[in-house]
Amino acid sequence: MLVSQRIRAIKPSPTLAINAKAVSMRQAGVDVISFGVGEPDFDTPKHIRDEAVRAMEEGFTRYTAVGGIPELKDAIIEKFRRDNNLSYERDEVMVSCGGKHVLYNLAQALLNPGDEVIIPAPYWVSYPPIVVLAGADPVIVGTGEADDFKLSPESLETAITPRTRLLILNSPSNPTGSVYTESQIEALADVILKYDIWVVSDEIYEKLIFDDRPFWSIAQVSEEVKSKTFVINGLSKTYAMTGWRIGYAAGAREIIAGMTKIQSQSTSNPNSIAQKAAVAALNGPQDSIQAMLRAFDQRRKYLLERLNGITGVHCNVPGGAFYAFPDFSYYFNTKMEGTTIKNSTDLCEYLLTEAHVALVPGIAFGDDNFVRFSYATGLETIKEGLDRIEDALGKLV
Ligand SMILES: *Cc1c(COP(=O)(O)O)cnc(C)c1O
Image (cartoon, rainbow, N blue to C red; front, side):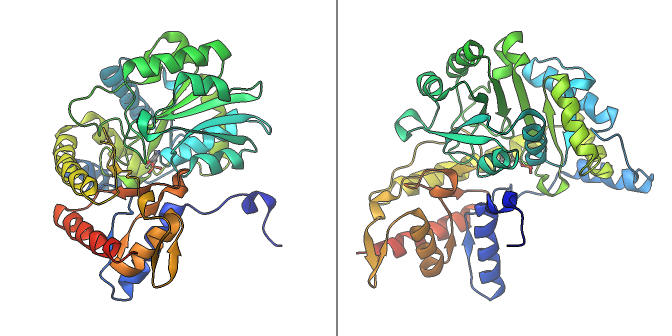
């Protein structure tokens, strides 16, 4: 065996894998409809792109400070003040190559081998491997559809052991779209303080919340809770900037310094041009977010109605992000030409081959009864995709 034990302990991102398969089918001429992608289908707003062009033309093309240019750190600090009423100093924030990279750096800077990290399921696919790569142990705590996939303070408390170091929270959630309320967040914060553990709050979908629901960060609960919290956020989802690779973290300065050290010995600074563009995104007009949110909301409502109209399928109302997470287990143990569909992977495999529709099996997020739909795709495509799914499900016996 050539590769390291570390590599053998993890798998590549299943969401990216499904997407790759859909892309290769498309290249072979198959008309695939994809609900698989985890990124907005909008262009990065023009004023942000213009700023990148200006940065390039002005020669802002060299190495920058490892943890981000001061101008961007200040824009991030201002964002926290403006949107979350949180105050941070420059040495309490850092910029990395996307939110995923922030989380990776944080795991490397905070975790020791043997530490346990509590991850509520359904979870974002990258949490467990990032924890494993830091030598720590993911502890998966299941939540139910009946609780809107939210972690209760009781199940958090039950999962805590003397080895517990960290809890990872994600609201709004990928894949369920669940949004924690203020009182739900406060109840979890009480447990965190009681056992003195750290919490990561992945707030990448903060701006993508429907029905005027308020957003609550656990860091807002109190100064004490804030001191145990690392907020992770980024530009990818809010400003349709997935390819630019800018994410940021805020939290305890000692750990932020550790994360910067790791970054200094791995990637160095995030892309200089993208950092300038990020300043324009955070400080500039925010109306593009509202336009994007309106489009997502229209699709969400349509998709939900269609999903709940399929025999045996049930889907909770996602309060944020751009995913729906319906239960498709009704179709398990059905057959197509002698082949039995046993789980979410079989079902997605079937729908890709039979209906040419790409979806991500729930097992990738830690719950096999479900399937994830991303509605970061046009309304017409959503309609056609659902028609195809209904046809294909109708052939199962
Ligand atoms: C997309 C996503 C991220 C980070 O994306 P980046 O492109 O790396 O900034 C982080 N957390 C969740 C839950 C996501 O869906």
